[in-house]
Length: 396
Image (cartoon, rainbow, N blue to C red):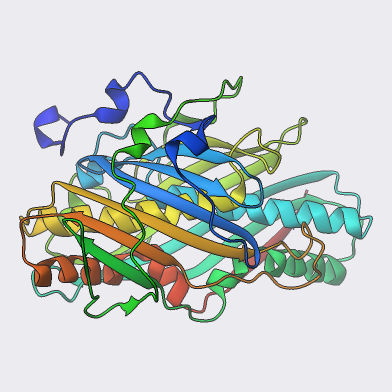
């Protein structure tokens, strides 16, 4: 695809900064974790860099770490394809979380797992008309294939794996219907929300350009890297065409996926797939000990990135003025039922997001930007829909 067709400059590709790193100076940057009320509390700052390129800083109360992550989109959204798309982060964080709980439960129950590979597919929908404001994002059940070699009998193995899946903190966002909460600011002035539920309390201070202060801690790991085009597969209502995600009227189905294995050093090696819209596959590393981004960090970044994408899509499709926009998003998860030793299903609170819009459009249009972005965001749909994970077990 030629550069003419791409939206915005390639800020990520032209930057001298590493795209992914652990932040060594979070205090100087000014990002704190929220008060930890459930087991882990993460604050995610996201800003738009250019077009659909975005940068996130995520600080976790549980780990104390702050990670810098970037996201882009492929040709289907006229992006530069320099980094994984938003949905890739949630799928990757989810499969990492499932791996955490399976391994932790195996340790607790003294189950020897000789081989383990997880293969996950997530499905989302986008239906309706943007000019008519009827476009809605949706989420469908998750499919998880577990390839495993262990001594558990079939019935016991199924129960063991379902218990591990429910133990994931992400279970709290999937099960039940959580209504996300928002605060809105336009050009530095707080506005009430129109349709979306409003969060109690004050609008947080706008992080502004504090992102630029972040410095990288040295790492010997390549935390994320492209591995080439995702293999093709048929997806019902799938899409592949350039700019197809910018069409006025849509009825399409999205299918990101991931394949996860444990390396001998204990780091999770995850290959993220983008079957529909068809796009590039990226390899992620994930760990809970600070060597690579943890599962909750990847999940939180994914939700923030996806929500931010909807603002960019809405204003570019309707030719509205939004030169700059940022969010501060708080996510609250319980500890894992197995990894945190609680013995309970994972829980989560509704997502809390503070939105900062710089625009010459009216207050009403700013409110509508928020409402439509929530309405079209796949991952806010994921939270407000009661979803199950469909398990398939294959012995290897």
